[in-house]
Amino acid sequence: MGFSAALPHAVSLQLSPNYVHGELSSPFLGFPFSSNICCSEPDMSWLRSPHPSLTRSGNRFVISSKRISGLEEAMRITREKELQGPRKVNKTPPLRRGRVSPRLPVPDHIPKPPYVGSTLLPEIAKEHQIHDAEGIARMRAAGELAARVLEYAGTLVKPSVTTNEIDKAVHQMIIEAGAYPSPLGYGGFPKSVCTSVNECMCHGVPDSRQLQNGDIINIDVTVYLNGYHGDTSKTYLCGDVSDPIKRLVQVTEECLEKGIAVCKDGATYKKIGKRISMLKNMVMVW
Image (cartoon, rainbow, N blue to C red):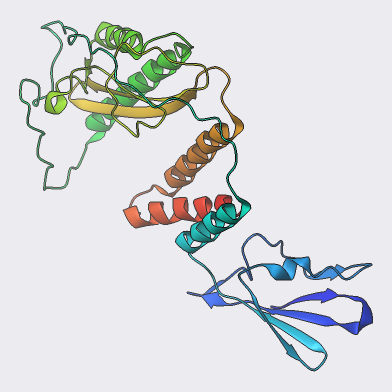
C-alpha cells in the first residue's frame, strides 16, 4: 500500500510505510492518510515533519519513516516548547495540607474487613480466587453501592466545600446501607474516602482545606459489603476549570474506557496498558 500526492510539474511523491508486527505503521504521526491528494499549488510544508526522511531518485521523491515511541514524541514536543521560549502560565498555588479530624465511628453491627484494627497492610493472596454465583452477586451489589455513593459525593464538589465534609457525607451514606467504608483503617488510613486534589496523585486524606474555584478532585470510594469490596473513583471539576485541565481529565477518562473495553476472561494486564498507551500517544501528537 502506498501514498501518492499529485502536484504540478509532474512531481510524484511516494510514501513507504513500515510494517511492525504485521500491522501497517502510519508514515508519520499526525498526518492524515489519503489515497490521492490533488493540490492547486505545491505545499511541501508537511514534509518538515521530524519523522520521515526524504530522498530523491530522478524525478521521484521517496519518503520513508519509522514508528516512534511515546517517549520520543514527548521529548520532541518538549524541545519545541523550549525553543518557543517561556510562556506566561497562571499557576494555582501549591496544595497545602489542612487539619485532619479524628476518624468517624462505625456501628458495631456492621461487619468489618479483617485488616481493621491493624496498621499493617494485608498480604496479597497467592492462590487464585474462584467465585460462585452467590459471590458474584455479592460482588455486584458492593460495586453498585460504591457507584451510588460516588455519584452522590460528586454532587458535593463546589468551591468552599472541604474534603472533610465530603468524607462525612460518604461515611454516613455507606454505614446507612449496612456497609463498611473500606479505606477506614486500611494500613492505618484515618478516613472513609480518598480525596485527591490537583497535584495529589492518589489516596489523599480528607482534611479542612476548602476546594477552590478551578480545582480538580478525584474521589475514591470503596465499600465492604457482605464480604466483598466495591471500588470506584472519578475526577470532578470544581467551578471554572482551565481548558488544558479539562482536556487532561477528558483524555484520562477516555483512557479508562479503552482499558475497560479490553477486560475479559483471559486478557493480560499488559494488553490493558498497551491500549491506554496507544490512545495517550495519539493525543500527545494532536
